Image (cartoon, rainbow, N blue to C red; front, side, top):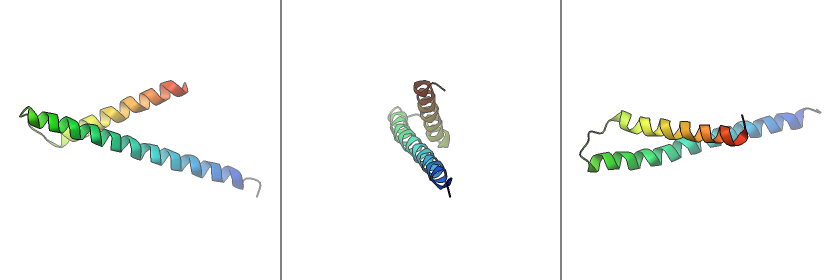
Amino acid sequence: MPYSRYEFARRRVKEAAVTGIILLVLIGGLFAFGWTRLRGKMKLPISGKSWLGPIFVVALVALMLFSKSKGH
């Protein structure tokens, strides 16, 4: 059983990764909500792409900033 603590550490890393992904989607969703509200105020059409685009962009930018800060 000497490797049991390593298995515990791996599990914690996976949990942290899933939590980070959920947080990215929530932040992207909040940004997309504001973006679609702004588009609605300007009388522009709103579709599913109006939601997915900003979520994807926010998640991509956040991942790039994270990788830059960690030196990967």
